Amino acid sequence: MPGFWQLISAARAGAETCCEVAARATSLATALPAAELLAVHRSFSRLMDDSYRHRLWAAADLMKGGCTDDGFDYFRGWLLTRGQAVFEAALASPDTLADELRPSWLGYECEEATYITFVAYKEVTGVYPPASPRPPEISWEFEFDDEQALRRYFPRLSALYLT
Image (tube, rainbow, N blue to C red):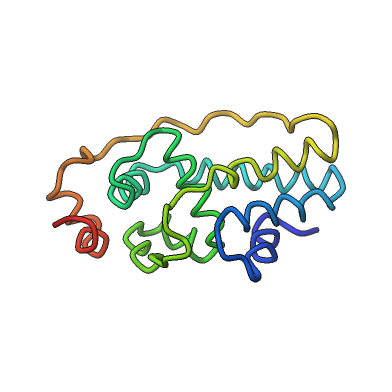
């Protein structure tokens, strides 16, 4: 049974944009039996919940020059399209995202990636997958406009985005 990261890895092969990765992953997911696809969807939902973190949101805000609720969802979608190693590194230390500044991946958001398993499951079964509970509330550690805190938490990103 392929998991979510296996779908992303296969979808990344030859893709030039995060939207291509999302489209390919959705297509690959539609080839799965419904039960396997539901398991992949649950993994995707857990990854989205796990990435709902204050410091990651602050890094997204810094990289994008501002980041709304929806923008943070789309940022996390983009992050998922970068693959498991990049995703896990960013959760451990969002400053590692300084390594992901490639012209073909600029924009740092991919709305389509937030729907990969929803669209595939609907196509396979005719209904949307069961909703997962909302992630817990974020514990806000500092304000996004606190330049000192940004420089302390994200020295590499700050060097790129703060003047």
